Each structure stands twice: as C-alpha cells, then as structure tokens.
Amino acid sequence: MATNSTDTTGEDTEVTTESFDRAWWKEAVVYQIYPWSFNDSDGDGVGDIQGIIEKLDYLDDLGVDVVWLNPVYESPQIDNGYDIADYQAIHEEFGTIEDWEALLEGLHARDMKLIMDLVVNHTSSAHEWFVESRANPDGEYGDYYIWVDGDPDEYPNNWESFFGGPAWTYDEQREAWYLHLFHSEQPDLNWENPDLREDVYEMMNWWLEKGIDGFRLDVINLISKPDDLPDGDPDSDLWTGGGHYINGPNIFKHLGEMHDRTFSNYDTMTVGEMATVDVAEARDYTGVNGPLDMVFNFDHLRLDFGPEGRWDVGEWSLVELKETLGEWQTGLLSEGWPSVFFENHDQPRSVSRFCEDDRYHREAATLLATVLLTLRGTPYIYQGEELGMTNTSFESLSEVRDVDTIQNVREEMDRRGIETYEEFRDVVEYRSRDNARTPMQWDASEHAGFTDGEPWMPTNDNYEQLNVEEERTDPDSVWHYYRELIDLRHERNVLVYGDYKDQLPDDEAVWAYTRWSGEENLLVVCNFAAEPIQRPNPVDATGTLITSNYDDAPVDLGPLELRPYEARVYDLQ
Image (cartoon, rainbow, N blue to C red; front, side, top):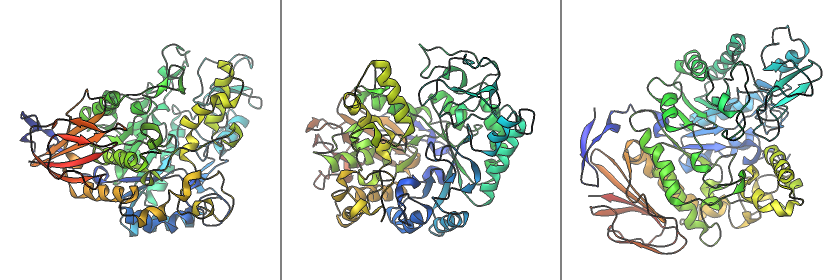
C-alpha cells in the first residue's frame, strides 16, 4: 500500500513505489556475457561455454545475480550468432548441449540465473525453414518468410537495412525478393503466419522446460510488418521504412500471444530490445497488462550522433543525458519497469564515450558505475565494464570483424566521397561494435589470459595494466568499487524501488539526484567534469557519506567541492 513521505524538496509526496510488487528480476544485477570474447578453454581463439564455466566463481565473487548469455545456437556466424541456423543446437565452437547444461547447473548452484538471448525477427538463411521456403514456395515452410514476387531489377519498396543498403535481396532459386532488415543472410520471419508462431513458441517452451530463467528478445519490436509493405519516408524515418515496421501493426497481438503461450507459465524475466521506443510505449510493453518485464531503449545512446547520423560523432551534454534517462526514471514510476545500462555488445565502451578514459580512468569508470547501480531499474553490466575496459584501435578496416561496421562504413565513405580509411578512422574507433568485443582482459599474460591460441580478434593494447588479476588485488580498483556498489544495492531497498528526483536538472557538470522510499532517503552526487567543481548543498538536508570513488570524501554533507569525476552517495537525515 502506498504511504506518504517527504522528499528532500520538503513537499509531501505520494510514494507510489511502495505499492509495487516485489520481483527477483527487479532486485537483480545482470551481467552480460559475449561468448566469443569471454574466455577460451580449448585454445582455438574463440571463447566457449566451458570457458564461462571456469569463471563462474568470478561472477559469484562479483555479486551478480543473473547472466545474460548472447546467442550460442548453431549459426554460420555471419553476425556473430544473431543469424541462427538451429534454435535447439549449440554452435560447435562454443561446445555442446551437455556443456550448456553444465553451465546452467553451475549458475543455479551458485544462486545465479540464466537468461538466453533469442532472435525471432529473423533466422540465418542456412536455417531449415529458409532452405525449404526458397526451394518450395507451396510447401510447409513456403510462407515462413516475407517474399515478394516482382521484377528482379526493381526493389519491392525503399526500406533500408540496419546494416546499410536495401533491405531486399532477389533470390534466383525462388525467383522472388525476400526481406532482411539486417544482413542478406538474415531473412525476416513472417509473423503473420500462425504456423511459424506455433513453431517459435514450441522452441521457446523447450528452452524454458530445460530450466532457463527468461529471455532477452533481440529487436523484438520489429517482428510485425504491414501487409502492403508501403514505402518509407527517407526524411522522417530513423531508418527508411522504420515508421511502418518499428512497433508495427500487430506487435502487441503477437507479443501478447507469445506471453500467454510461453513465459507467463514460468517464473521468468523478459527484456525486449527495442529499435526505438518511447516511455509511453514502454508502459504498454511492460505495464500491468504488458507482455514483457522490461525493454531496452537507446535514447541516451543516440545523444552523440552527429548531423550525418550514427556514423558521425556529435556533441552530447550532461543536461541532455539527465533529461533523457530521467524521463525513463519518472515515466515508468507508476507502471512498467526500467532497465539501466551504458554498454552492451552493440555499443562502444562507456568510459571512452562519456568520460576521459586516460587521465582519470579509474575515477571516470567508477563514476559511471555509481550512476548505473544507483538509478531506479534493473542494472546491466557488460563483461569488462567492471574493469573499466576502454575502446580500442583499428589501423585499417581489414582489422574490423563486425559486419555492421564494415558494411555501413563502406557505404558512408562512398556516399560522402571519403577516399581513405584514415579520414574516417576516428569515427570507426569511436563507434564500432568491435570496441566491446575485444577479448576479456583476465591478466597480463599473452592475449590477456583469454586464450592459449591466437584470439579471433586482437586484445586491447592496455591489457597489461587493466585486467582482472591486477584489479582484484587492488582494493581501490574499479572492480572492487563495482562489487561494493552491487552489495549496497542488494542491501538497500531504496536503490531498487525508491523514487527518483533530479535535484540539479540544468547543471552542465553535476548530476545530483535523490532516491527515497518510506523512511529511506539517499542523495547521489556525480561530477561529470574533468576539473574540480564547487556547488552549494543541492538539498535542504544533512547527510552522512555511504560511499565515494575518492577515499577521502567528506563524511558529512555540506557545500560540494567535487574533484574530477568524483561520485558520492549520502544517507540523508
């Protein structure tokens, strides 16, 4: 039942969060594992499931509750596993289904849970469904994908692929066009076909019966396309055509059916990756009658897009960041639930993106950790983020492994008349998804202790100074600060369910916000500037320091004298 409390502005406020139902996935801290790059147990240069098993005690020591595992299904690996050829088999380089079962058992034995990354907007073109669909249009799988008959020299519409270029490929075997919103070897499934939906639900229930604890659903709000496939507006759509298929016409019908047929029958956690979604739509997806528990939105990760879009680097401001994330903090207060993240396998490293990653590396990485683990919502830590891993360097485009980067960069260079990679290198090194995919840095030995062989992609040059072994022996390291904050989040109910208020919304350097619930009141103060900042006490209250990323921060709350990237958390009285 809701109770009245007084926030730090002195106004009586209805604390509606008291009426929220408790749930394990709201109180959990999630750790994302990208299997290609986490730990290689057999020396072939590619991470694998046995490598993850070897590091389960590491995850347990860090204190995380849930592992989100990127795709390990059988795949040609055109898009590093997001092109699935068999949903119920494990890719050979990662191991076997027995290895996977041992991983699940090891996690559950340590009171950790496992959510699987699932891609059902598209499959690999090597999937049996597509092989049969292109070969036999009138057969069982003939309508499992989106096919359009027509002139092989004229695209069905002007929709663009997220990876650059048209979203259509003409298939000579079937003599028809098929839709692929991503790579040409990732054909989109036809969710208007009830037989396709039944097969997907059967597969999902197979995994749930094996004991997994939920799903991260890849680009899930793209699955519904309009029957007439109209042209998109190049001037208004973020991706041409996206206005028709992002949150498409039958999206809630399909996800509602999925919910009822699969995860509603289990104690699961579900999070949907959304290409674009606003707060009002998120309430529909995650509210009381919504089909999902959480969604990922990327509003805050588009603030640094330049005039040319994603493959251009623009200026961002702290005011914009606070406003963007704050909207999700308050907008999902009475209905829905936020996810909180700065990194994943599709994003560059946050310490390089939002802060100075050299002069104040530790301070910057721990500042971001403070925000991540004290905002309202379920926090997601990407592998290596707990070390403050940074962006890397690519001397040529041939060193890039990511198909998304390669295709988009080539198209952008051609479109803008850029002749040499060197002219575009800064953008690639700032934006490429490969920044997050360099091998995990375990120690200072060759290849950062990731593999005894030749790694599938080079390690970051800074691994000798920045690695797990070094940070675990240093009590003042980024790693230990993450563990301290994870423990604090587990101990303090207010950090999970409490309200949020930005106390300095227009401040261009300092993010100061309160979290309160019942009798608990906290103040979080973060200086995002690389120089000292002075501010008056942002709240009409006294307080006692709980934690800071500087070991000599003032114990009592008063006027603020903040050092570069300093972060503090206070108990308010």
